[in-house]
Image 1 (tube, rainbow, N blue to C red):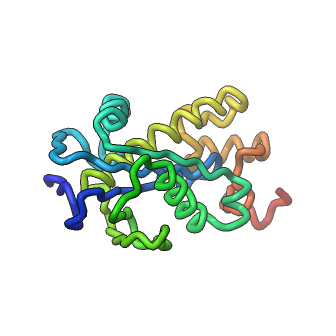
Image 2: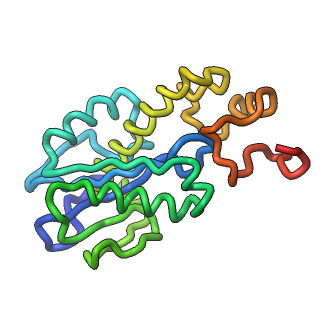
Length: 200
């Protein structure tokens, strides 16, 4: 499917998306991107559909060719305090705040968002596979978050965050059973299926 360039008729339309919402450890990370007109890229797609190699190739291209971009982490303590949905929206707001130009319209991946500075917006389910700016934001959110997880992997290699990036894989859960939790784990999440029987 060919991704569309724009949803609205505004010139400065920003796409925003997050990565890491379903993880057991680490931040939720959002990015916002305003692309120039015209912008074409045959590889760019929803980051989940792309190989790690293609995401790595697209990251500098998006950063240099976009009119502006922003990336924001929201960390575990805030996720535990305000819940993952609110933390995801907070990360999106933070990434939009970093844009050098104020967007005239915001398109958001998913179906939940809160108004940002009275700028009109539209939520789009599976928007990262429909619109180029959301796809670009999904690539930046994923690559920045992955880099962060690889960095904290050095501190706690037994969880293999370098590979699982904090997602609830069997290996990650087995490590939680064996070693307990770290300061990077989300305490409000069900870290183990049997958690309600354990004293974590």
